[in-house]
Length: 113
Length: 120
Image (tube, rainbow over all chains, first blue to last red; front, top):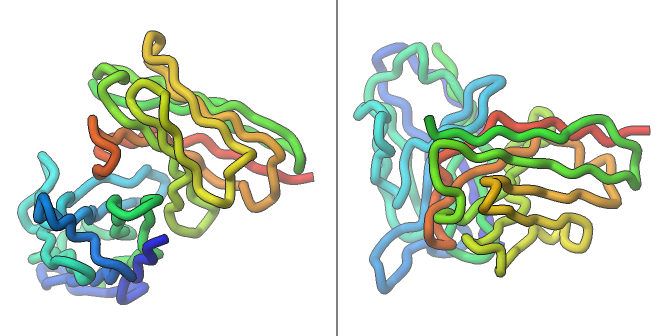
């Protein structure tokens, strides 16, 4: 199975500052024929189910604020929150949905500094 | 409103069984691959199982293979997960999630989850 490793495990950022979360896959999730990266990002707040933020590594889900962006290709990916808001406090997960069983990263807890 | 609502969780002894259900509304279930994902207390997300649009193809995580059975009733807009031979390590919130019309896609709609506790 493809192992997804996120860094850091936790992160504290000041309001209005940039937050960056990294995700590395043990195998490439780039589908050569479609040139798409099968990589998604989710946000999970306490007591709530995950919410899809980004899919195909960089496509923002409808309704997601544009301060959230995804980048990367192959095995290395980044979720960036350009200007942290109080409501962004959550755990963030990356997920690959390309090779074999879908797998998630261990999560990154984002807090306000 | 597009939504998924799980039910059927509860407290069960090791070796017991439960049947989880996921009721879909606001969309046509038969157009979507569907998934079950679980989350043990205080831990991350783990994919459990998936089923294709007409129920003819299923896949399971190694940890549940041979014990869990995923199924769907498109006429009733319902997804199910029969969980047998339960172990303490199966304790988790179980979420159903919507994929797309293709096997490989992100999950855009999630239910609120149903808690399964396995304990003697």
